[in-house]
Length: 282
Image (cartoon, rainbow, N blue to C red; front, side, top):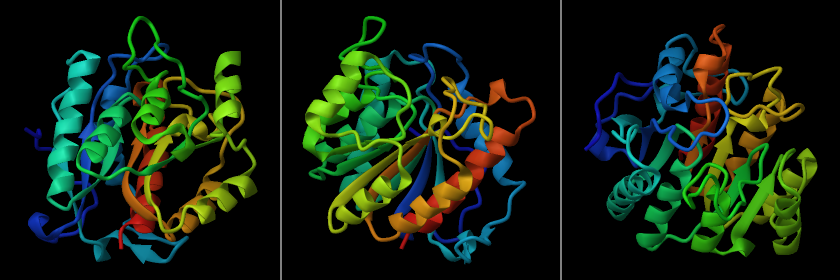
């Protein structure tokens, strides 16, 4: 059962009539460096009160969209396998009911449950993965359900040929070799990503955005920051391209707000979510 929470900048439409919903996934049990991602959904919602629903970049307004904030899944204290299963069960139920979900993390392990639920419901998406890390380890700290193994699990669910990874700036040698062998990694060049997005038109897409893909000089409040990375105005170019895709699910993960006492990381993440909503909801 979902834990009710205060609303995001959502439309006033009846929730039963909305195809899209936001769901908080406050999970942090496999974080390996800086804990705190379980507080991401709450702080992102709080930050959303300080930004406008209107985007001056794409000239659209959240108030014109039909979506709602469904609250949080109560998974914060669960062991990884149980958390993944509860997320999967919820996504399976909602997908069968014709709903689509933007998940707000929480650390990246939550994406395993999301995509697993879609696949079990008969939707096998291609995965578009933006991150500073490959997350391709077979297991990490003794478990196969981990933020460092999430894309390895997704490749098992949808096939490695249906995974595209961009923005990676850190990983084990074996991860680089695996990504190159399976052809999932397309580098950090923005043009290569925009071209790849164009090739995905007509396919069901799951979009997973780890906020550490951004330059930590702009967004420091993440669990595993890496030097360099995506800039906000380049993300707007990506969001503009996403409007052409059939996005069947998405998530924004790894906001760890306790590591940024200024609050700017939460505001940054809230604006990312706003632009993503405006791009993917029809």
